[in-house]
Image (tube, rainbow, N blue to C red; front, side, top):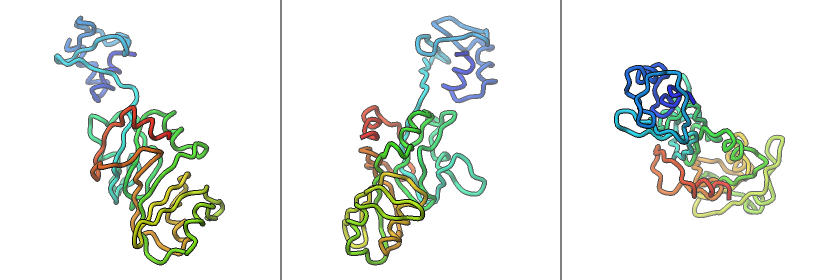
Amino acid sequence: MRLDKYLADVLKISRQNAKKLIKDKEVLVNDNIVSNINIIIDEKKDCVIVNNQMLQYQKYIYLMMNKPKGYLSATFDNSNPTIIELVPQQFNFKDLSIVGRLDKDTAGLILLSNDGAFIHNITSPKKHISKKYYVEYSGVLLSDAVSYVENGIEIDDYKTLPGKLELIGSNKAYITIYEGKFHQVKKMFEKLNTKVEYLKRVQIGSLQLGDLKIGEVKELTLDELEKIKE
C-alpha cells in the first residue's frame, strides 16, 4: 500500500495532507524518516510512526449503534439527520455502510461496517438471521395472534417466514422475524388488527442491544461478531 494512502486511512485525513506529512519528514517507517511520497509499505508488517505515535492499520470496522428515532438510516440526506452523523470521528471509516435499515421513526440496534462480505451475510434473505423487536401497539390483538405469526402472515405479495410473538404486558410485545421487508413489522401488526405506536429493534442474531445508550456507538468485539451469526 502507498504510504500516503495508509496515512490518509489511519489518520482520516486527505491524501494531500498525508503527502505533506511525508514531505515535511514527519513520518518514520521502521525507524527511518521518509520523504518519498511514492514509497510502498506493508501495512501488516511495517512500523509507521507520526509525531511519536505508532499507527495501526485497520482494514475493516464493525460497529453497533442504538439508533434514535428521527434519524434516517442513510449516509447523507439534504433535509433530515442521518445516523452517520452520530458516528464518532475515530470510527468514521471511508466507505462506512449501514447494515440493513431501520425506519426513521424506529429506534434500536443497527450495525455499520465497511466489510462488504459481512454486510452481505447479515442482510441476505437467504441467511435468515433473526431480528427481534420490542413493540408497543394500540388496539386489541387477534386471539390467535401468536400462532398466526408462527405460521407466517400474508403481506402484500409475500408470506412472512415463521416468526415468534411474545406478549409481555398490556399492549406490549416482542416479535422476532427472519426477513427485513419494508415496514414488515408494522404491516404484520396491522394484519393482527392493531397499530404499532413504538418500535425498537433489540437484537440481531444473538447480539443484543443491551445497555447501549440512545445515539451511542461502539465497536463490536470478536465475541459479539460471532453472536450475530447465531
